[in-house]
Amino acid sequence: MNPIFVLVSLITLVPGCAFGQTTAGDSAFREQAIQYAHARYVHSTADQARLYNGAEYVGHLPSIKGYAYLDSLWQTGSVRYDGVTYQNVRLLYDLVDDVVVVPHIDSVYRLKLQNIKIDRFSIANRHFIRVVRDTAHNIGLRTGFYEQLYDGRSKVLAKRVKTIKTEMVQNAVKEEYLTDNSFYIGKNGLFYAVKTKRSVLNLFADQKKALRKYLRENRIKFARNREAAIVKLTQQYDEATRSL
Image 1 (cartoon, rainbow, N blue to C red):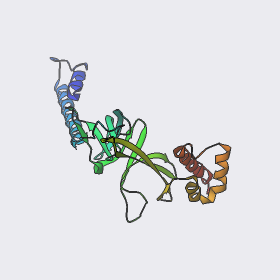
Image 2 (image 1 turned 45 degrees about the vertical axis):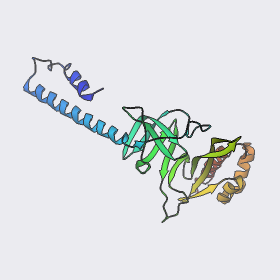
Image 3 (image 1 turned 60 degrees about the vertical axis):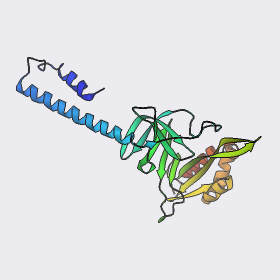
Image 4 (image 1 turned 30 degrees about the vertical axis):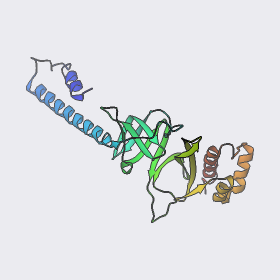
């Protein structure tokens, strides 16, 4: 709803501000309120224009089996874009092209946001940040969006990627999406790729014995759910070294 209309409507309900009963002070107040509401409206619409000002998103062929996105349907989320946080925005995250998509506010077109302007975004309580590769410090990550799985003294990030597999089947082209997830643990300002239980335990070598015991006692099977195991081991490492 237009904020000018809301404020002006409320003003007319204030005692002493009804038409025909206004004083000079009341008139000045009404004028200031209208100017304030107008400024807020202009600021709000300018922010919206900044968000819905990307290039058209074409997407992928509908014949490809599966879907290219984090989720097959639009999800309500938030995005920090060009210095402004937008809440309750419908979003798609394309894992093939690594782009965030929004529906155009006034049409059926879809727009892709400019990656360089995105600091972070959330979809269905899953949080993503944009990492820019720092060659000077060599943090171990390529530029792109990463899901934050754990954000303690140590960190756990996941890189979600989808690729398109193409093959010939009975003289016909068949395509489908393949999913690949890579995991990274942040320790002392650097990130390390981890894939196996050994790679995680070697990274936390000073607590390896205690972490092995933790896995046994809690019946955590690394091969059964690698992602959860990495997060739990990292959390346990932080807990074990909290006072060190």
